Image (cartoon, rainbow, N blue to C red; front, side):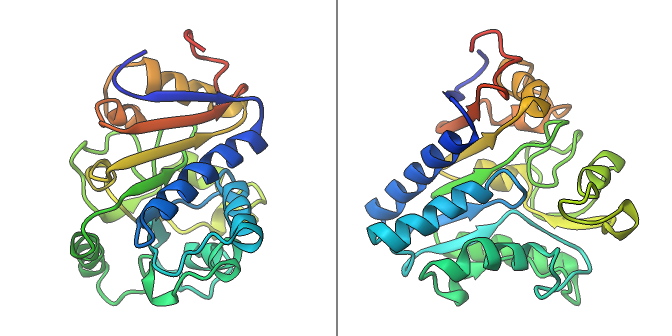
Amino acid sequence: MAGNINLVVCDDAAAVAREAARRFAGEICARPGAVIGLATGSTPEATYAELARMHREEGLSFAGVSTFNLDEYLGLDGTHEQSYRYFMHDRLFRHVDVQPWNTFVLNGKAANAHLECQAFEQKILALGGVDIWLLGIGGNGHIAFNEPGSSVDSRTRVVNLTPDTIAANSDGRFFKDAAEVPRCALSAGIGTIREARKVVLLATGSSKAGAIAAAVEGDFTTDCPASLLQDHPDCTFIVDRDAASGLKSA
């Protein structure tokens, strides 16, 4: 296994969600004013459902928590059903006691997208940095919208979406077809993500097996953006058995 990545292999996707939620809940309980980074997409949905359950049934409070989301589509405002602001409100924020003014999602309709990205970085710094950041992974190893070729020290910026990413988001789960998918997004950079004190990456399903194998056991390379987490001091990949199926060491 390459680098420092701590690999946790769970029996199934439900177990991945429980383990991820347990770690984030532990961080919040230990530090009620925690700054947490969040991801969107289908993989973390079950984790958010479990965190909402823990709030509802076990008293887990988000009242002092600040959140930062990885990315947002350029051109979509927070009321658009496919915006990531809408996703987070629907899947997590409205189910817990987080204060709306403490939830930071990049504004896809900002008058100046570049200044919006700079302000996002400044907000993270002002709050002392991200304590723990949740990530997913794309089939090509991308994290957030940092596609292959993204620099290890890249910052929050406007990025072009690749044809593969556009196709992955137009399979009916999110957009109905590729024509509806925005061509650009605002995305936290790899350098931004790497500065979090802890990183937790989730992957489920055999379609992610190749990316997980490349990220964990492959070279430290911009060809697989997730591999650039190999030298992070506290990075954990939580995967199910299908996503771990390509690993030699699993």
